[in-house]
Image (cartoon, rainbow, N blue to C red):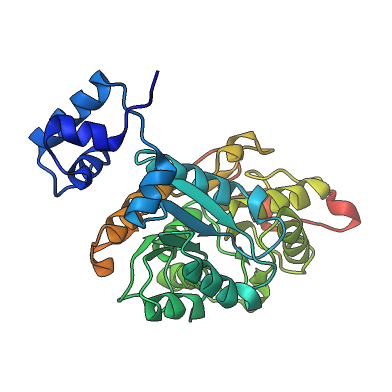
Length: 354
């Protein structure tokens, strides 16, 4: 059977090819009556879009790029996987493609962006884990290219972004631990050249101050965002002379390492030392013990970011697309009240309690 063309469909409906194309792709400038009429005809004649021809005709790449965070292990991070899933779901509603871009180092990101934008292969770009002062954002603004950021830099008034209020989340987490009786609360943080990491550290400090607790630098460890990083940081805190009875972690992945360090000393998370992560990734419920976490709406975030970027590509004003969401405490078994066993733990000789 000969394939029905867009030209044939337009002729049958006495409409222009552009109107038919926009109706099929759900553009808001086409009336609902015309959209329904076009879609009914497309179904009647078994019309299937020729994506390559359409892209050539419209000059729109119909592809969005996601720039992977620097680091060889980024693709395997649950945070990245959830985000990509949601963005892909959003793009699929239009039949658009998602391109993942991996850059070996942060120093090479600007050149990779220039090459990508000038190639004409993509219509928009998603960035995540912004730096405090982010040269990538400034470059994209100067190039007047559609983009959105998952997160915010320090100055975030003049571009599109979607973020979760992690500073407030860590105030909430500190309040929760204080309510359980904890007074020495450790912090396992991410590198603070990332703005999200600084905001989580700020939230931790604000939470301590709000509860009249001192800020002790010996209770703060900054490490890489991995389980091994979390384990090393927790080992330093647990082996100190005046160790914490609870620990807050900048990411769930770090928290998995913290749990491992606690187990290695013969202790039980939630009973001897409380642990709270941040992200709310699905694997938390399978941790040992199941991890209490400040959960952010991950699946929603990817879909929303995709929808917002598509709206900007369609001509929307970037500053109209700025959304701040909240994280929620999801309790499992890794947090609990302070008690006699974790007020004066003896962590010598591998952590055996006397």
